[in-house]
Image (cartoon, rainbow, N blue to C red):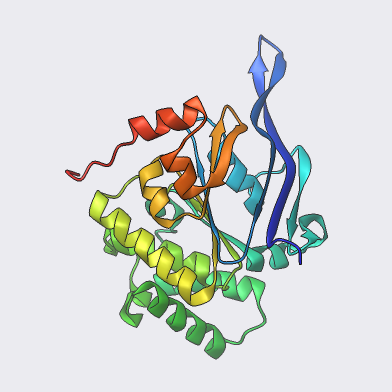
Length: 259
């Protein structure tokens, strides 16, 4: 049986201005190869600029790869429609305050992906929204709220609900914990773990803090300057790091329970 997700020699680079009229290629990451199984969490860690966010945005389809292949359940994403890709892979962006449309109610925000990507009628869509709200721990009353009426924690819950609304196989989580204090970070992590246990969802979790990802990850992949420098079981990577960059990340991201 093929892996749920297989990334094979994926590469991404950008053109940057150089001189007065020229340009040059800047490599964001690559080549990168890995697999992800059903119900598994892969943490992608590294310093700022290591290519973490560019990698997950490329997998999500927000960015276009320069080379390499992505397979979902053995099928190349090149053969999937945009609807099939949206149903299979969803993304939680870094800052819910900027990724949630301030002019739309929570009900409309959650309804949009279902309306665009399924053939469900209005009654079925409403029930799916209610079920998803319950999954993330929010009451139906929040459907009439606007994002600016929510707390930081509630905005994160809505962002998770929007990602889960189509019951995808894979959720890409792009550093959503950076704006939260330590107690709320663990609440969000525990919510994601609960959803994973209930739905069998797989995660690719982008973060700086290796101590936090150890709590929820099966595998850790360390990126440095766009390259994979270390990859393996989370406990082994954290307890017995081999690469200097991994050791540096562990030393510079000690837990701070005063926050």
